[in-house]
Image (cartoon, rainbow, N blue to C red; front, side, top):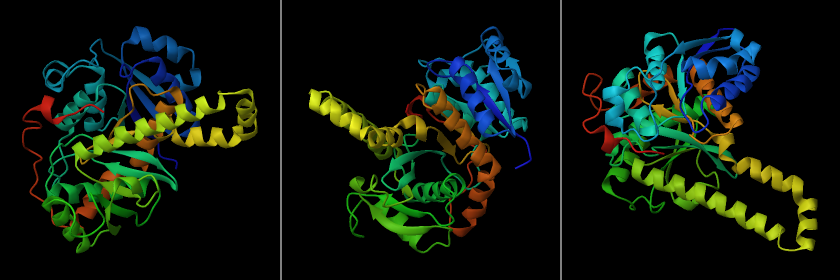
Length: 358
């Protein structure tokens, strides 16, 4: 790829900002030489970090602002008082066409509220959704919604399916991703009316995906589907459960290999395999939640991501931009009936209630 892609970075978002943002961009620049960066934040904190990395500084522009959205700020406050914040200005750069995508590790609820207010939703998309990559036995899968929409109807679930499949095509490189709806059983009669209605629509639609029906929670980790679709309440619970289970397994394995001298010797023999397991389950290697359905690209990095984790989120952002994810979603919408556009409606009736933290 020869065309330069510009990434707008909220340099003040995240637990260890701005250092984690700058160093993450440094790694991303090595992986993606075509990338250019716009850093939004406090010059006094960012400039010394850029000065220490001349190669990164050469492809970067620093835009100063003193305003920062804190981790405690509610979405409504961010909308009222955060319009000049580093987070908002990064999103504004996407709207203005100065950047191809924005990345932030800041407050999830505030980022969702600002992104929807500034960028608006795509035509025929009722609600944007939060999607991310999850590790599975076979590699990775896309899952959405992860908390943006607590209650969803059948039309919302179909919209999420269109967007999730397009995301899988761009980031996972799958021509026809296998998609399933998360349910309490795989039988067609199981589940609530919204899930069953969405399944019927997907079965009869002409979309670039393979609809595989329903999937239960214990099948996600097995890699039974490339895309798993559900409402934001269920998705967030499933995500947190999976993350907690991964931490539990890690703790149990660590304790087991520290229980005796013989166990420690066993660890030395199994170290290579265990390191591979740790890498596969490490959330930093799957970092980068995406706000799908907006008229612009925004990626949410985990607030506590490592340097390599933030670089992974930038990589996800670049993949979406260079494969023109928004065009794919818009194109795929023609294959299934969608609701009326809400592009010109108020962004959030109650931002503090609708935007949940990841």
